[in-house]
Amino acid sequence: MPDQNCPLCGGPATFALVDFGRAKRIQCAVCKTFVVYPDVERLIAEAPRPNREAMSKAASALSDEFVLLISITADTKDPSGRAKQTLGWDSEPADKWQ
Ligand SMILES: [Zn+2]
Image 1 (cartoon, protein in one colour):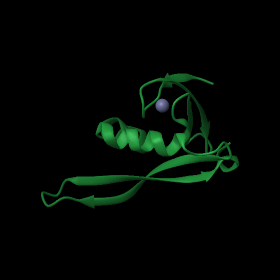
Image 2: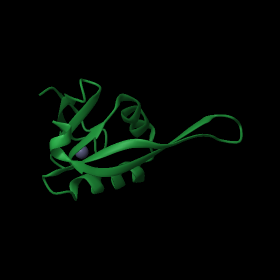
Image 3: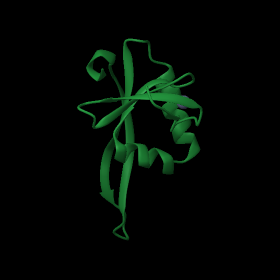
Image 4: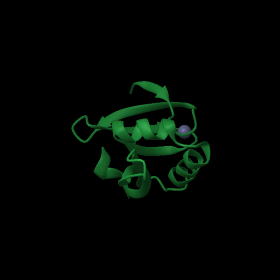
């Protein structure tokens, strides 16, 4: 599996492409396993540190049969008309994301 830094904690991680190559299943010693699409990975990089820590905690709390799917839950515009995207996360069966 290729290597990258974990987008949540910055530690060493590996990833595999899933969902026909559209998403990454990232594996990290600290955060365990979570799934992100490229637009989500970009948002995570811009997210405040407490948010990344919350996602890391949520992912690492799951048992091995589950992975954390991080996704955009709200796609809105703020009063100045700028796009505002909110991240959410939920557990998913790991075998769905092989
Ligand atoms: Zn991590």
